[in-house]
Image (cartoon, rainbow over all chains, first blue to last red; front, side):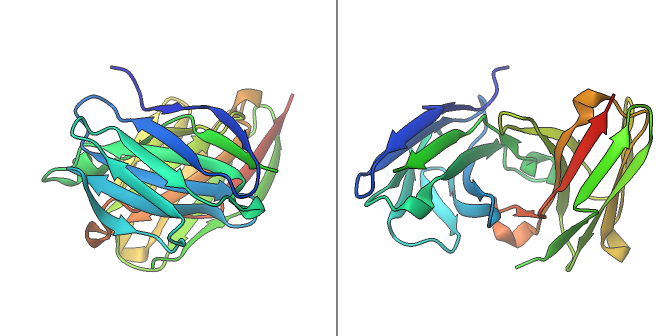
Length: 116
Length: 110
């Protein structure tokens, strides 16, 4: 079974631009979560989607948004990029269901975003 | 949110040595995962261990949920074990949100 995939793997943008990152979950997984990793703040939760609905959101400004499609693929968008948005963006998928084992999260390789 | 503390922050070993990484968490949790972040940034699942003990080759983990800590044991370290090890937890109410520790940076020298 294929793992979580993320595209693109690397991105270079300039301040003020916007960017869209894509995440395809493991087949059959219905939940997708997004995280931002920086050296200063570590791994921080952005948001989670399940059945095309955002169920949970971290403490990030409204410039960060996302969505999920009917096939469970997810995208996140960052508008008006700032230098501080430079980070590794990771997405994770999980099955979701009754029983704890369904909540194990599996991560993609990440998208490394550099804002100049 | 839940506070997750990992220790030690840095660990330097020679090949063949054993090590123990610790993860303390501040509240009751439904799930706990251990990850190894490879040099390219991907988080590799090591254990899904909300309670009890599991073993996978040279690695094993134990979670004592009632005392709010988990331990990751690495035996006979190899250079390929180098990297950052993360502990992450979630509560059933947090809907897909994992709370991460700051990680333990492990360096194994030949």
